[in-house]
Figure 1 (tube, rainbow, N blue to C red):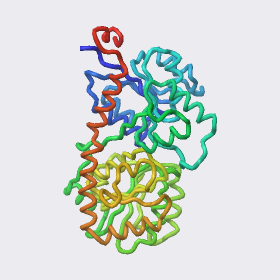
Figure 2: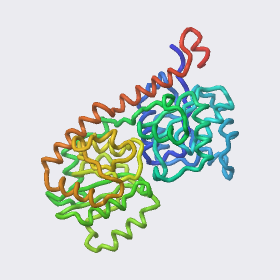
Figure 3: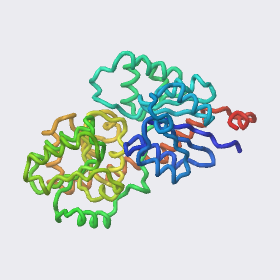
Figure 4: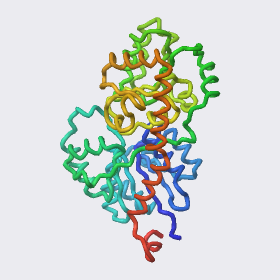
Length: 382
């Protein structure tokens, strides 16, 4: 049996975003006899660092180690020489310099993956960034996107051949996210939700690209007895809070819960989950809500249509269309039968097409496929 494959994962930080949670999920579920993991963060550690430490994963923060210095290719190259990984895997634009560093060192296979967009897809990317991204893709041994939409987006912008980009969808852990009637009842009592009150929720970073303001505008015209819970933190919190405060009747209706370690429990308390993002790759929060058996309403953007079959496993609405979102929420509030039907089919869809087992298997096969096989393989990876 050959030694474990050492993978150096390069990420911007280990905060609570979908990419970071997805990386932690992947590492937790990969066979430790086959794979060894080192995580290098460019900017900061974050909440998921403690989770990885529990898995005995070595975590390095470049900013902490090189305080006051800008991120440069030679710093990453030095880490690669010291760690001696068999695979260097960078994620998103913020770490793409690691591709050049790994190519420079020439001691490891190189993977770069795209997990989402930092801004609106309609914003023109500087030509220098497009050219550097294409260069990095060319230097990498494998380029991955988490959705077909994201693959098409980057290949069209860079001119990089589409056949050289593979798609590996995110997967959800069905052992952590599942419907639980007892949890639902207890958390609703804790939150002060009245019997029969319609509960709407959304989980994610409070950043402009997540567009929670559209959700607030949608519930403004929603009839009946409803509550809205927004889980997350970020730069848009003050704007969202000000919008709420300007509507006195919302004092006990709209709640900002901040960052939370209880997302699994909070999801069970909801009647519907909303993802109003301007752009997405494959949103982990959407998969988690569907795995909890919730009906979901999401924007028809990014990878969302690859996850949600409109009218079957959830509903889709145009980006920024608060009126359409309000209409869809009204229909769900009025029909428990519709909510239950969409929730059942959402659960079935993620179990069949977006399981964490499938994701882990795909990454494992990809990593192993990068290394030589046969009698000399043990020497190559030792």
